[in-house]
Every structure is written in C-alpha cells, then in structure tokens.
Image 1 (spheres, each protein chain N blue to C red):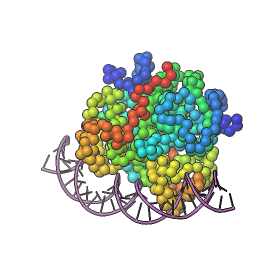
Image 2 (cartoon, rainbow over the protein chains, first blue to last red):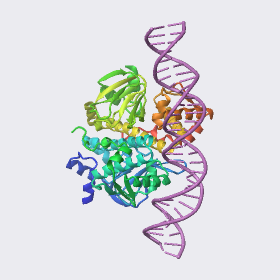
Image 3 (tube, chains in turn purple, yellow, blue, orange):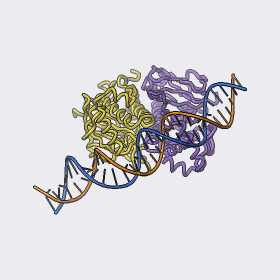
Image 4 (cartoon, helix red, strand yellow):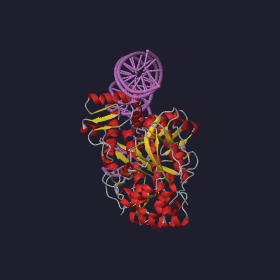
Length: 241
Length: 241
DNA sequence: CGCGCACTTGAGTCATTTCAAAGAGGGTGG
DNA sequence: CCACCCTCTTTGAAATGACTCAAGTGCGCG
C-alpha cells in the first residue's frame, strides 16, 4: 500500500530502506477506526502497539469530575503507544480525534527487532523519547505560560510536526480540533479557549476556526509561546550508526 | 563500593545479578557534586549519561523571564539523563538540589549493552518510559489540579518513589526542597506555595517544613491530588524475559 | 423543522499573582 | 561575641487571569 510505505518511519528520518521494510513487515493488521473512539483504555494488558497511518489521535488522562487532560496528540507516522511494548499496559487512554487508519504491530515482533536489529531498536527507543521530550514541553507550557502563550505554543508545535510529515506546508493548515479539544490540551475551559482565540484573532496573531489554523504573526506567536523547537529534535534522529 | 551496588538498578526491579554487574561495569567514574549545581546544560553534546547514587537532582526548563519549571525530580538509583544516549543532547538543564554522588556511564558502553544484552537494553528503555509516565502525570497535575491538589499529588508521588528505593518508610520523610522548589515543580509562585502549605497544615492534610514532609491525612491527600499510583508501575518492570 | 453541537458573549466570582514588608534562622566576618 | 547579611518563609492588600453560570447564535443534519 503506497500511503503506508510513504508514512511509515517518517518520524524517524534515519531509517534505512531495509529497516523500513522490517518495520513494515512487523505490521499484522491495518484497520479503520471512527472519530472519537477509544482504542486503548488505561490499565488494560496489551500485546500489540499501534502505528497511526492517517488521521489524528490523542492520549488522555481523566480527573475525578470526568474532565480530561490530553497528554499527547498524534499525527500520521507516529507510533502512538509504542511504550506499551516495554510497559505492557498504559497509564492513560488512547482515542481517535478524527477517522483514522491504524496499523497493529505485535510486541513479539518488536522483541525480535530489538534482538536482530539493535539500531532499529534504538530508533524505536528514540521515538518514545521524542514523546517524552514533548511531554516535558507540555509541562513547561502548563506550568509557565498563560492561556494565549499555551495556545501559541501548541499551535507552533503542531505546525512544525505537521510540516515534518508533510501534512502542512505554509502557515495555514488543517487541524481538526474543537475548542473543547484545545481546552483539554491547554488546561483551559472551553469558554476561555473561545475568548483566547478571539483575542488572538483580534491582535492578528493567528486565526483558528472551523478546524483550520492560520498562523499570521509568527514572531509574536513564538514570543507569546516562548517557543524553541529544539525539543522536537528535527535535525537529529540518529543514534550510533 | 557497597552503597553503589546497593542502589544501582533499584529502580528496575527485574535485573538479574549478572545484569546488575554489567551495568555497574559500565560506570567509568564516580564523583561528588555540590548542591545547586548545573551538571548538564540544554543543548550541549553528550557522550555520557549520569546515574544518581545519593542525593536529589532536578531537570529544568527556563522561561524568558528566567523563571524555571522543573520537569522531573530524581532520587538515588535514577538514571538521570539516560535519554541523552539516544537523543545525544538534551532539551533541558540537569542540576543538583542537594550534594550528590553521581556515576558517569559512557554511551559507547550503553551501545554495547543494547547489542550484547537485549533484555538489559529493554530495561534501560523501560526506565526512560517511567520518566515519560511521570511527565504525563505532571502534565495532568498542572492541567487539572489546583494548588493544593498539585502539592498533594507531588508529595504522594515523591513518597511512593522514595519508599521503593528505601529512603522513606513511614509517612514522615526528609525531602530537602525549599518552597521555591515546590513552586518550580507545581507551577506556582513561592508566595502561593507558602499559603497552600499553611492551609494544608491547618486542615490537617500534611505538614511540610524544614525539608521534612509529614503526611497526615493520606485519604484526603489522595482525594485532593486525584492520585492513582498506577503510572509508577511499581509492580511491573519486566519486559519479556 | 427542529435538534444537537460548537462557538460566542456577559456578568459575577474565585484562585492565584504581584507587590510590599517583615520575621526567623544560620553563617560569617569584624 | 555580636552585628550583619544571606535565604527562606510568612502575611497583607490590591490586581488580574481564568472559571462558572447563563443565555443566545449559527450551523449541519436527520
């Protein structure tokens, strides 16, 4: 399948063709999932991990009142719950935001990869560390930025990530999130997301509406979000050869 | 050195004696570092990682105004910047909170471990995933909890972690942090940390002072911090045999 | 047509910050 | 040995950012 090969391993730029083939061969199944469906519940035992081929997914933790905090958003090419391989079960839920095409990879095949292809194994490790680096940035975002800064930071992060996998080019791109989603990402209420976005629109920073993001004043967004893209390791991706 | 062997690998309960020996043999140097010293700056190229033997360390990201957000705290037995092995440089600073005894592990020896001992390699991977799980919990804490909840959550997390490495037993334990540290952890100002702690004292939840934490009403703390310890994977730690 | 969902807007409240000042303790140098 | 100066902590008062509650708009879809 063309699109599958196209996306696979996109996130880890340093894979050789043989490694890509090996990873692709580890897929046991590809299927479609509807929007807003939970595909993994926190705590359940897992013997497979999920590679996202098309669509958007999120990882969530719930508070007692049922309010959700998103702890990660995933794009095509992401190994959404690769950490379930070493961890065996997850501390959060995984759900689709949009309709998604996902590939299933059994853990025993990953074990074989770490044994037969140590470099590819380290690239998988690298991929989970990218998630961790993003988690840290989310901690920073929530701990130190105000509503506008959080939104700006998240929009910039998403834009760069989407550019690296080729689903965004210019400063206008499709990001099919509702304001409630933004609230779950940025630790804000829906109401306050609405106010924040309209203020950013008024100030000429960015225009977010109808699932489309238009970044208008990049310099101001970078300033507001105190954004430094180093944590995305965009020009790295190799461990040892 | 007795204490070294005692601590090494404590975090990853499932290491065999041979694996412990192998990890210990990877240490090239042990040294002492004073309190409040930065041992790694964000962005610098790294060819070694650091194992914390005694003392407390933190990982930090700075905002433009120079305010810091702590993104992780480390205890004896933690591989503080193991992720520098695949990543090659870090997106945050690493600094001591107290005087620390640290062991240096060159990355080429870690490469050898992943090649010669895949299971130990996966345990190292597991260890970085524990950090990621804690990062997620910190995202949740900052995104969904109020000041009292954040403090309660952090105190409980620290208590459980310290119990698993044997440096805390009962509900009273030494945690040598200032209120400014708590602020950098919980995304609060020092002033508000002071108010929050005194309110928790008044309510009989916990008594934090002079670097000593006394957890008084565990049930209430768990409720306030919406605390569920599953993310610490305390009863896990094995991948595949 | 009407219902549900996403978004907007307003008014009032509350949590946290900011600014300011002062106390408590520990260590150091005169 | 005392005076002084750190750093850490506490407290007060005012300002502000975000939340809650509430009502209302616009839109797509059955």
